[in-house]
Length: 401
Image 1 (cartoon, one colour):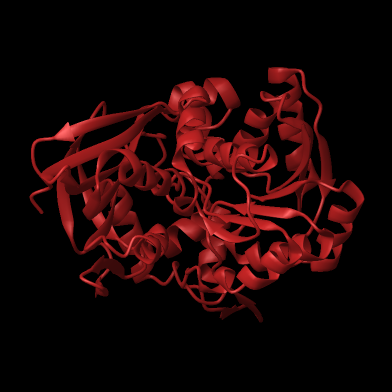
Image 2 (cartoon, one colour):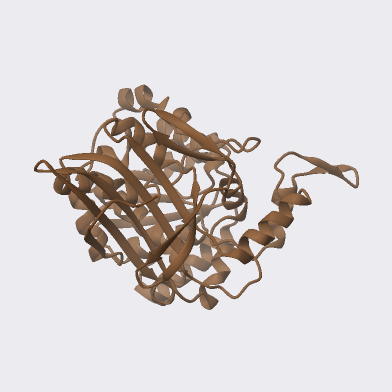
């Protein structure tokens, strides 16, 4: 059994600590920290009511490396689970090195003043974590995370060679709001409005945001418009699976969401550069975030399902083959179990599983690792047991687009 420190008290943090509390044989002591302790206390009360477990709560500014280091030295956790904002990744990694704790996150670093997320900043910590004998695991969410493990499982068991890989992310849920995001609005909108980018024949192909649309019929959801986007796992998959000739990421959006996003962009509300308002500088996107519903508040009203998976083509025993691995998650079932909707659930459960594999030693090593570098089998085994069952489908042909 092991002590863990979880930083971040949003929906993902809530799911992760609920699921950790349900696995007392693995996690002996859980501390939840956030800038606002009252959010931690609300989650702790829910955990106690649902599981009977008591978790500790702490107020922490994760941008303060010294304060985070001091907390790590005081608690002596085996692992720090970073479920805060991507802007804070490097500061928390620094604190882990100073305090002697392993590290896990679900999203790669992104600077506050530029919509540019990539792994280079965190991969640069490889030598320091290796020299310290510590492990840093990057991207233990769903995408990235589970989709990376699906790819590793495909390569280990289903295909001898992967030629093409498509990641399909569909949220078929309806929260009843005119416009809201299912995770942090600032991160979500920065991601969606970025230029599209995919890997093909050894180079990156770029295009306008949301310009390339296809229709796909998702199991238990139905036909949905999905759009070609850039997503961080494309970078790591292209790096660790150089055999793959083409890697693409697709995400579904409804027409109403896109219309609101277009209008907000046209009037400057999605800008991330400061503007002067009544004598002080404000960032329009941060102001918009304050106006939009808190993603964790959407759980009680969200209905429908998510369907996220990977479609890979390649060779098996010399024959062409296409395989589809996916998970379907129900928003209402996720809320009933943890008090959070399925977007938070599908990220928080993999964070818990990655943490469990690290603290039990089933995943180990010194240095910085992405999910697809590690043995997929123990993760896939836990995934089905902890609320995210997966299916493998043989498709008759590759995607026609």
